[in-house]
Amino acid sequence: PNLLLQDQDRMTPLDILYESELRLMELDQRLTLSLTPLRTSHEPPFTVVLRRSDYPSSSVYTWGDASNYALGHGGNPKPQLHPKLLLSLSSLSLHSLAISAYHSIAVTAEGRVYSWGLGESGKLGFPCDVATVPTLVKDLESRFVVDVAVTDVHSAVITDRGKLLMCGDGQYGKLGEKTPGRPSFRIVSFFKSLVCVKVALSPAHSCVVTEDNRLYTFGKGAKGQLGTGLFNNEFIPQLVALNVDIRGVDCSSSLTAVST
Image (cartoon, rainbow, N blue to C red; front, top):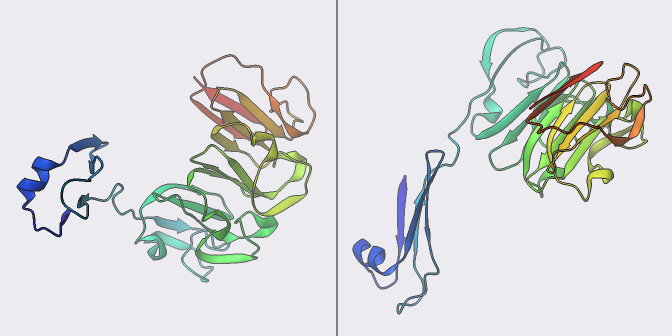
């Protein structure tokens, strides 16, 4: 880490530490050194900054079928038979990664979103037939994304403020609205006043858990996978009668599961 001291009056580090009230916090083995308001008899205020990356640099390796460009290594469609470093993400600190057979999405520690692969139905989050390398989703630059989920046909993200945004194919109502699809990430209007904390997707339906521990499902219900007691397709999120503390949720095209 680099220690940066700034003081026009050339105070020594001991002077600074003596006259400033320091709070030292250790979170997940990450150090943050901060100061209370730094107005002293000296002008202007000085700053002490201990710089240490909150997230270490990350590396992503992909391999396998490259025909849909979901590996992110460029335009070569030949299978990648060995793990290969995804160079375009090597300078970033990653928070999470979600992949499907047709596209992939990465979220950085700074809350930015990169997607690549086939863009059919708009599932990359921007109008594009194909992105052969990770590409910044510019429509999400003003938001801080903390979670992501994808299927072969649609995508979803949750922001630090609990907003759910989705894009891609809207068949059966799995985008939470009656729409054939969305070419870019948009807030699901039903959840505008709610705080979303978890999202799980299947090619047929979607599941969302809110901060008040409620589970909502929407999309195809032909196999009973929505948990509503009916076999209907639902274009508006439906509350599932489940009075438990939900820790996790997952789903496939024909079933749904939660863990407590």
